[in-house]
Image 1 (cartoon, rainbow, N blue to C red):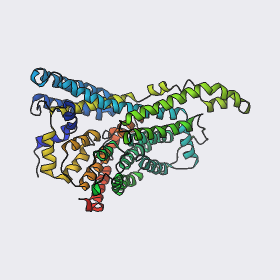
Image 2: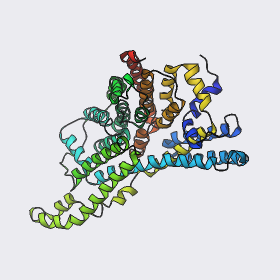
Image 3: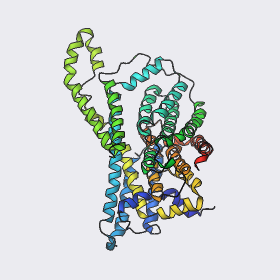
Length: 485
């Protein structure tokens, strides 16, 4: 069916987060601004802002700046219209913004804890020790490309794709050094692998968790945790196809230097354990106590804070006990500076440009959703196009805007689909973000972590290869799980 150009543009740039609009107004009382100048202006502002984000490699303008400005402009225009309609209620827009801020606060605090742990492990030489071990084992760049990809794919179902990507990128940066081509290809591989690995586990990605908690995937009339694992083979294919092609371009070399063994500092292994305990706490809070995962993450931050206090208090005691067996210089290097481990310094080292970028995105798309495009999009996608085509498009949209609000919009529409279609949209929303570097939290975070080496346009060059994996994984799901349609 042919889609009018105006509707197609509307679909691409404004479908993203209408679900938030309904949730933010509570009673659904809002103005339909889809045909108002504010609606078109908001889309224009959002597109311009995202254009500047994509051009960061050339303009060197931090990606957070344009989206923060765009968020303010969009909501100011919306508020201006509602001021002239007091019958709608003077607090309608205020409540909507507060809801969006709550959404952002949960995301920001979750990421902040994860980044703090990453920085703490980095300061304790965890990644340097892993890098030196990999180098001393004689692995070349191609072997390292596959090792980090496999680890990213199988860690992300247990943790989350963002944390997994940050961990693996730290290893790649430590091993790759100045080899920009290796770092770029490995980061792309990590993003694809982490997103694919998170698509077949309810805890691997927030979108799969949303679908699982909604109780939609219900074979035999009961919510089945393991039903999502029918997506395992399609997820493997989604990662393996582009990885196999990209591996041919990885330099057939070995890392230079850094062959000496590097010891982790005191407390490094315990911090790694605390990080796993923090992830477990977050999952437990959400699954068993029905609390937001961020509460579990912040509880886990307290683990690190108390352990940091312990390291500072026991530093001199342990130094005195073992100094007789080591030279002072070697021992101090292993013990680590207790002041340098101050947990608040780790918080300060977080990638604030990334965190503020998420603020801008959440507020921008929240404003577009509040304007009211959901009904138009629901009719266009799930009625006019059909469920399969619509779910494929959802994955493409998640490459432009974060998959969480896209999935939230789909769950708000609640189209009548069989379980196979719900698994399909879970797959496409999870892996579609790999098509562009800004399409997933993992990609955005790695652009900050590997700034200058992993960039939007560097990723874009390999988008056709990733798209091939995307298409093959969809066909694999339609074939392997055909009995669920």
